Length: 299
Image (tube, rainbow, N blue to C red; front, side, top):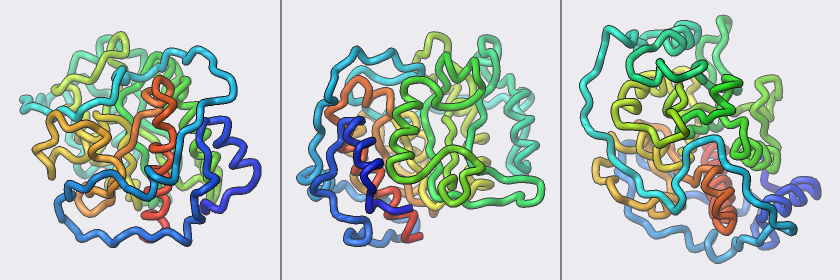
């Protein structure tokens, strides 16, 4: 997993609208060590990445396809979840579930109203535990917001236009969501919500609360070296427990620095659907990607 990019990878990034002419190789950049359980400092965005990375418009501008996943029109602010009563009879206790049991619990979940409108649940994709290896470890676990229309139809996260952009970002660093990708496939992708909100609306606090145990158990079993929160609801789900003052904080204030979910480093970045609407921020997202990869390599 290296950022010493070859010609094909650089061409791919050029196609995405990101130039890396001034980006040093990964081994020349350092990331300060993190102290376990330390609260995330209020640090301005990384001066190195913002000064050296500039977004370039795509060679040909085409109308952006409507993303299949929910995303804010402008840079979103993180909204802290409100307290919501649980419905234990409608959602199984998954705190001790293995991977197969967790998948079954998600498929059978009726804890909120989304079960009435979904076509199917969307669990996740990538390198995951197996019966022979009940615990695994991936380099990156990407946490998006919620399934969109295409995801609801296909049962896999990030398969629409936003997913294509995410795949380009993975490919640019020699990674893939394919669990058969060997050393390149050390990635797992999921969402905060496992069911599509009607009309691709934003997740509601009660829906996030009901899905949180599923996400937490996925993290425990996948054991990622680094969590990547894509979008405000991904950031909310991973950071709110340790940072209750997140309400109203713009996503741009959280990116560019490492946070923690328990003992696992968290990198906050823009959702690919937002980047389709705001291509000028692709360079910032690439800087976040480089930070996540460097943390994973140092883990």
